[in-house]
Amino acid sequence: MTMKEMQKAVYQNKIDKNFNVTNVNLEFNLIYGEVAEAFEAWEKKLGTVGEEMADVAIYLLGLAEILGVDLQDEIERKIEKNRRRVYKVIDGVTKRVSEGEES
Image (cartoon, helix red, strand yellow):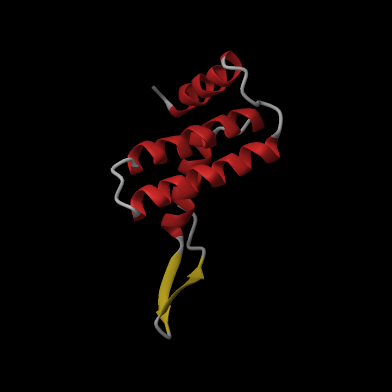
């Protein structure tokens, strides 16, 4: 399943289950909650960190579909942008010093 197909499947599940598909503020807040649950699962070694991370991804995919964002395209673009950036350790801190050259 492609990421775009996942976005559509997550959105359709929201429709089918009568979950929110209009309140963007709520969706962002629900993502925060899922990230907190994933952190708690990791911190407490509950063994459910993968499932909690999946919940984070599912909420993010749903929000992307609500907002009309092609998340796969955006992630690929951002990975390439990050790849081109140049970082140096300055006074013990890694700092970005250049956006890098276009490929």
